[in-house]
Image (cartoon, rainbow, N blue to C red; front, side):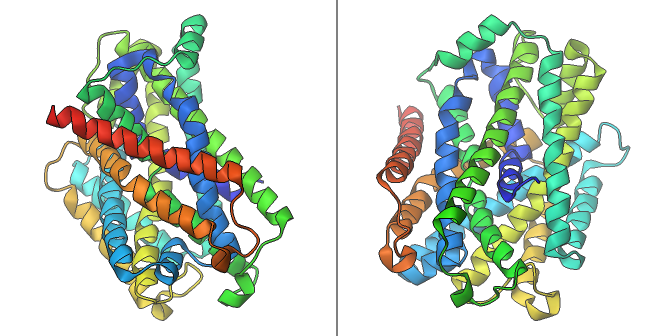
Length: 409
């Protein structure tokens, strides 16, 4: 019964996001909890626009951009999307390897390579139906963070106060973590995946041609809104409990700097018990194996659609060489980046900041397309959706602008 929105929501809480939220909780404690409810409507707005575009227009995100905008708009978006996915996939593989290394006595580069091979094998040999089933079960791994947070036994009154009362600091470190949280919560790969997942679902019921997929009933859109809302509530809940678990333990104990996912898990063990540390590791590994294939597949969707080529997880590798070749290439590059000696947790946070800078322009393009009657017919956005999505674009742009200002000043 778990809908596609929960898969997207779980992928949104990838190891990059976990690293960012853990860093924020360790550095600023419960004072960062207010970020979760503020981000929820923004997360819903952008994922719903992406889902609606795929469902009503019948094409994936970059296919739609190619149809609607000139090439000088398309290609910079393509470069940003693919580069962002590669960095994020590399960071996530490093995060998974660092967590597994606590219990698997192998060098981290070897674990990264093995994890990359497992992920690619599922994409190459597995069907879309198999991937969907696996993704739904892996999404449940994130519930480990709810249990871990409860085991820290936080002060409930302080938790409530921190959730409802924003505490903002106008310094570069605080703002960089805010932008990183925005970037990881509204990551560009989520837009690509959600729109293409709608197309893949249509293909799964036999609508292989574009003209068969165009259009959606109001009942279908209501179901989509419900599915997206449930998925984003799930994602936001996990975001909240990661900050809570690290804020109530690591920050309270004065351990404000997190060097790796393994460091975060090890630091939790003496403070919240061995089980809490193991649960933290389980969440990183489980969602990592969900998120990495979504990122590598997302890069393939972006590339083939930008050049007018076909590519789907329903296709066999021999029938979609560029699509599966891109998945293979992105996986190899992501594995290779982990041999350059970057700190995994720092790379996770910086990948979130990079994603934060790419959010506003892509969101504006989606707003333009979902308000274009030539593409959406009578299913263009209503005033409420436009207000929420437009506000999200303004907030994300302002956050990155403030961050640049702190760097300059």
